[in-house]
Length: 267
Image 1 (cartoon, rainbow, N blue to C red):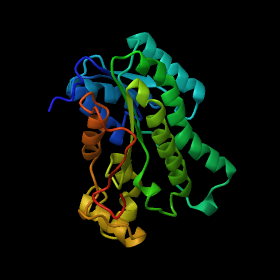
Image 2: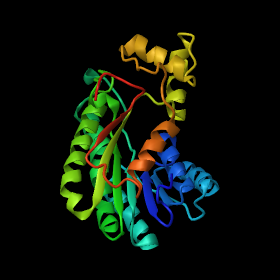
Image 3: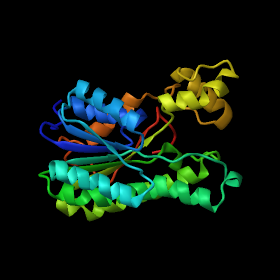
């Protein structure tokens, strides 16, 4: 299926690692010119190499602090100078975790700055460029936890629920302009950062943090949130759906909040 990315331009925030990089690589392979935004220069440079190998010879990495409004504005100014238009924005940034008792006001503010306001600011920066294109799509990343609560990520989940609500609202206000806006809610996905952060924790139970079945075994044991497929997901499985929603081929899906969670009791 041709998704219609030939000759298009795309920005993927958080596109240097994990699910964001998987999305950026998929868009590049489909023929889009891709700019990835993230903070770390080394990871950005590695991502650009991967994107050029995937099929985007003009891929670019833009160093942006997604917690800083001015940095985000400068990032989109660079996109405007480079392309003058934008066909799709995929916003994948997420904050850290923490139990309620661990979070003071500063912790809540930091979480909402990344989990909610980074999306607001990215969309604000992208909208003039999206309106200049002949077709345009926005995809945000929330989280499956907005429907299936986990005490360990209370602020994260609240910030993502807010972003999902904003996304739904924007789908209504931008529909008249033909800009389709959707939200993807990943479940437990085995990314490199997930594995690195939890490898010792899972190893204590004799489990492998790179193994999707072992990961879901751990999730079920400690958080009682199994999935119907019995395994965690992979970044490319999130990327394939995201690419469709962000594509020209998607002509009628807007305002959707889509779980990619291996099957759960939430719709």
